Length: 304
Image (cartoon, rainbow, N blue to C red; front, top):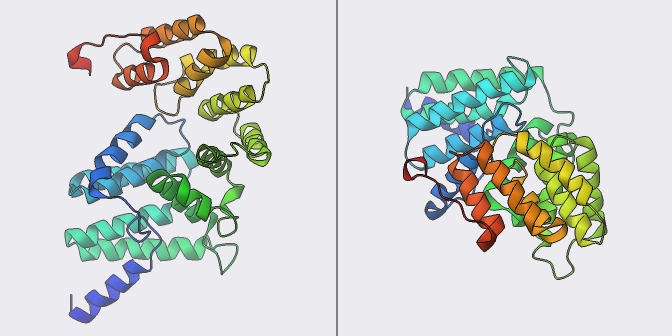
């Protein structure tokens, strides 16, 4: 490849919308922490963010210097999108293909990089954005997910209002938006505003199977004096049937039990969760964090 061709390729790559061009603020000291957090979210097929999670995990592996692991996760993202969307192609692959184009460029495989650029061009023409001034909602949704996951609530508060209004049509986006605003309110002297609680209510109506959101919504309502004991017990039944992950809802629900139901019932819920998943390292961390000195659990060393 000539110098001119190489420069043209780089220019095309820099114009892409993907993790390599979004200026994700991940310091070296935080890379392993973010990687572990994403791993704890879980990879069950019921997670609507699975493709986004794999894309972000692939980028973090690249930043950690593991190109082989990065490619594995980018390929998993492609497969996950296909399963979740029940389609082999669509605008949701633009970011994923952008990541693969960049990775192959860094691997020195310029032909493969150009092949992905061609696939992206085809997708953009076939699935254009509703507005020429805006990115496709699928791209906005994934960009926002990556920024919120990496940078937290501060980025979210700057990001959400107008420029991502198209992405707000997504159920998953509304859920993440509501949760991010809730997280941000923890740093506010005035606490959770009424409009944020309303956004959480709407998000739960649209995303009723999101047990993590449901647990936090119960917590916020209980803080305002609502009686939520029966709803908490009903939610606990669903949480116990779900795979263990940081988004299963168990951790916030245990806190709800401790504060608004009873400590004894919270301990009982923790014991049932441990009985269902005795070998899960993450579960042990959740129980100790949520229950503190109220609960002790021993996990064999080989299972940690």
